[in-house]
Length: 607
Image (tube, rainbow, N blue to C red):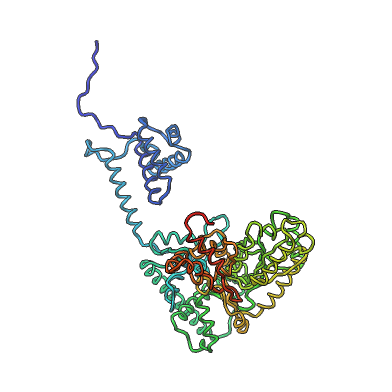
């Protein structure tokens, strides 16, 4: 029998994967996705595991589709990289064996690959350590500058709430903080999460408070100094150009429209820089002598430092209608209200209101920007008038299910000083309801006399629209010459001296975003608010009585401690009896005091 020739010697090492080039590309894709924090890293890892188990060489990415965890996307990426590999190294370049020097035949084929990957990771690691600096006029840039300049103001609280931060940072940012761009779901506020991840910003408390870290303070200081330097250079350049113009101005009629638009944008940016520099100088106390014109001007400067303001003629009064008043239920009657307002030429806007059915805002007049689909978002301040509309059947239902008391309590706490109840169909329609008409009439009178609401009675939808039209005309005349200052509800409280504001032709109002957010029904509540809600569930405890108890004992814990300090049972029962409530300052009474004591101090069911 013929014998085959046997070749003796060391066997050439077989590579762990017959497709090392595909393995390298998939590894690079996985590492890149891992650095970016993408979940696709797990998809690439599964594909790598499948490729390592496959014992045969693959000619292209399309053939890899037979493997597990290889989809159309991964196969397409491999084919694109393979074509690029052929263009760089020629169409005959090997793809199944990695190139390596022949001096070390016994070495492992995967060692050069690992060394290359380690070098790539080191290079990428060095790039990642580079300091993060937000792009100029981006959301992060505006937030850092605003927090820094606010911290430099005398008497600064060291943090800012979301609404006031968005309002003051908006002039420094090209994108809107509240409205996303067309085709995108992200706003300028989305960059705040990046600032928090980079340890430049800290978010604490509820409602959220934003403040700078030491690292963020240093970066913001550098950005502010650079912004101030550029503003000064631009002012010097503009003044130098004005000085150099000795002869008559020569008008170049060959300027194209694009250049004019560019000059307009630059002038707007210059004015914004000057305004921000001026606000910083005013906040730090560097005010020129010409600006100090008396006590009233100093007061306005203080208000301006606290928030923005709208001057007469720069805003319009707009009626806001809750979306619930235009949709759902008897839609024919609700659409009739909208048609009546349109027929009366009333400027109104339909939006979601978290409390009330109608209110008015002073909306800033803005001019559309050439080249942009939407005009810039105008600032809005809420006027002190809010209307809750009630039909007699709705009033009956709200009394039965308890919404009536809760709505009045929320209207009192919303921060607007002039709540109004608009009651429709006060005639024979109430005779067919489940509650007697006398009870409904008594509830309306109590709302006006006891709770202090202004009650307006109308017969139908047309009269309601007529009343809203008259109120809109009245408010447009009332606020015609007023300067409107923005106040923060957290800092200045809910009230103010309206007569003094009217005399000075100025008014301090809340921003609409802050008002609507503060009126959310199911938002996170403080212990004090929960305690007030508990007290109002007791029969006979109104909003005024609950508020009077809270003035003496703000939490359940403080009330229980007061009960523990009492020496006898009768003293505990009469602890709250002498508390004054309401405008008439009447006593809470021993019966109600005993009921509250039994509720919080009796173990087991109440008798």
